[in-house]
Image (cartoon, rainbow, N blue to C red; front, side, top):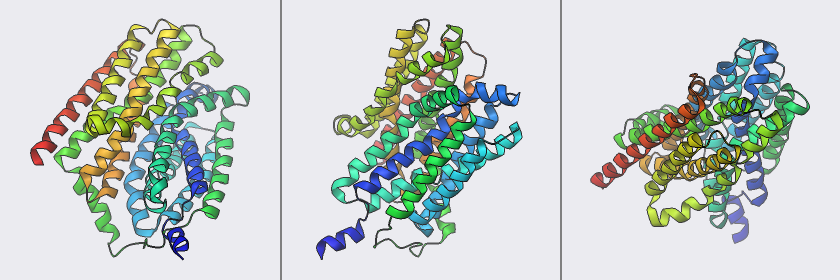
Length: 394
């Protein structure tokens, strides 16, 4: 009887966790796939597509965090995930059929809005539905998938485009997401103790996000967090044209983008380091390391080996900062943790939406990297102010 009761309270076993991690990878890849697609899609549609392909998706994705989190609290995790994944599957395939820039912009906006239904809801579900012994590993694996998507999305999109054309990036992704949708429908179950709504009105859930955003400590966190994916997306968006200027062909560029992939797994060390440095200390170290990586890349941008090594340093810093910032948002927003997670996603991916625009300011690549390193320095300063404020209020 005890085992049955435990399964009803914590129905997410290892199979469900693996499914959600794989789904997370393909959902987030839709954001980063746009980085190498700007040139081929622009050539195919005969226009500049950075805004339609990248910015629209990222803005809608960021905004979606503020919408789907409260809806999932009100109506249940499984229901919202199924609705969101179904709409995302259709929108993703439709993006591959877009015949004009305005149509692509609309479809990418829908894709971004529906993709935002996954991350905050899946993380909340794993926190509730996984057995305690599996919970930390499940959330860590999910966070790693979010980060790995940053490199994998670029590489997969480049590879498919070279082999089949850019439209197939969206069509094949939509097919995979369709299978993920079926898997969620079959394997995912709500914990028995969770009740949709919980006696709290939907209006109050949305209001909680606003209250969290107004806190001075959260404003300082947001100032740092905004720069994180802004720098990541801007660096990789600027990297492609820079490598073209160095004479690399498309297949060689793919391998250089892969250079940063091992650094993504540094996220698994964030918890261990936090026990020595504190969570805020790890976040500051991550931003500082990312800044050092950007400066090294600026100095070594004329050499392929130097660029690859410096990008690995940069990505390692990002990987340390992301889970630490998620934890800080959750702790600072307590008891409105759901609002904190929604705001965390909004700020993080609002920065991602600014990344492509930053990369297209017509700055030389080394100058762009130095400017991004300066933003990392500002993030460290904001986190220092956050730490002092929280100590003063303790």
